[in-house]
Image 1: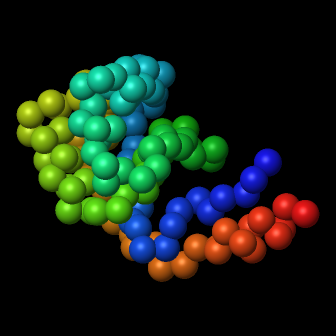
Image 2: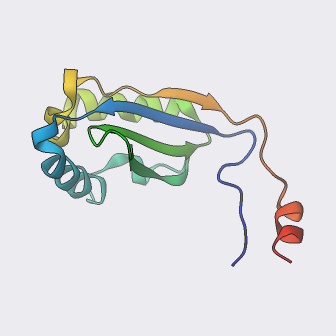
Length: 122
């Protein structure tokens, strides 16, 4: 298997950090998947999305989640996120504690060069 960097220097990660109502975790994941993988998700139509997002659940606290993806343009992500928040309002949001679903953005300032990863797989 070829090793590849998780993300590429010069791009950005969006990192949503949130909690879900304990009694609604399964429903949240179901609704998230239904929206995320639907043709109505404008995030997946943007050329600025470099790598598709992953929804992660904290192994020590099942109510704690992160949604992380790589983008080349965080202004484009923020523009589309506004459409989601104001117009589309996906159903999974209702299960987020506090209803806040806003990411932090992180600039990727270092990632392992591909030639080093290729050498490491030896």
